[in-house]
Length: 470
Ligand code: GDG
Image (tube, rainbow, N blue to C red; front, side):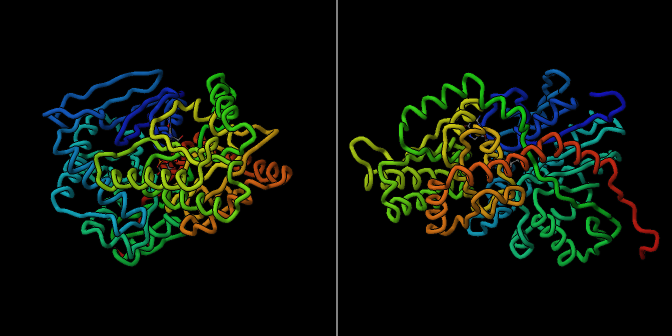
């Protein structure tokens, strides 16, 4: 920790890793970059289950200037908190998928109690002048629970995923309690202005809140600041990754296999929010409507498995593998396989090489908080031969990357025609668009994200206006 700085305490469901070889997941990437620079404490779940669960002994590992302290969950906690409430209720709902969301009292109860126990375990580790930064939808109640434990310092919250409109969020039986609990934070941060406005609309319409200024809202005797902090990547570091020997090997391998063919890539955790089924259909439509691409393009989808314990994810995998088989069956020739899906993960450097070998990257989520893959793809490009990004209008990254080809991921025709445009884009346009995107990715790094959030948290004003009616 640098001199004079208050200690940063970050809380997230999974903790670490701090090295470059983490598993797939945007939160870990953004947060470990931030913590490595500043130092501090990172608190969360160990990733293990034990009988004692949240009552287990805390384990601490120190790396550089970061202490990583974790506790276990027991099987019931894992099921109710993580698979149940977080990933069967909150994840789909906040991604606007009311059709996939399941609600039950038991998992809500476990979610609340895990939040309460994490707070009880964290509170004794805190000093009054620590800055506590809580991450994501697993811990909506953590701030209010820390207040119950008597912590009076600054607590901020950042939501990595979208905040859906109140018309959808009110379907959650505990929606009022969750937003009220969010008011215990001094600062709540969102990826985009749409998310921030959805949150404010909920406070106003459902809880009778009043806007004090563009960024501050009052609900009863609570005043909270709600601001936008688009997460970024370590752009200079990623650029170096892309020219590392390991990246180079992967780039070369892919270029050798592709030969004269243009390479299209997608890289996503296998998740229904990422629009993979719609993307595959878009690729199929490309081959139908623009037959000159047959034999001349190849599409590699890297889709490491995620949350495979949940039915919706098992179903998605089945559907995607079937669809890839269908497309290959329909169009393949003896010497050409149009589409390849890989469910294994790669190292981060290998991925950077894969991005660099691609002419086009497809990032077409149906809804995404930000999407770091879009930014990584841009940072990994060769300035002498940059690729084209096709980006969903429903990814948070869209706000910063207007130079991408923006598509409606629900429209198969739109995806196919954007792909065609990307594949045939003249060099000058390709280069101009990439330069615009590169500037944006370097202007909004993970470092800036972290520093801006912490500064805003230190300055957040939670006082009631003097003329406020009591
Ligand atoms: C959430 C929000 C928001 C992918 N495959 C491999 C691998 N990855 C890495 C990517 C990227 C990360 O995982 C995925 O980040 P995203 O941002 O694209 O998506 P989510 O995981 O859904 O993240 C998202 C993010 O939080 C941050 O706030 O942007 O909207 O949903 O870094 O490169 N990494 C490795 N092997 C792989 O095979 N090592």
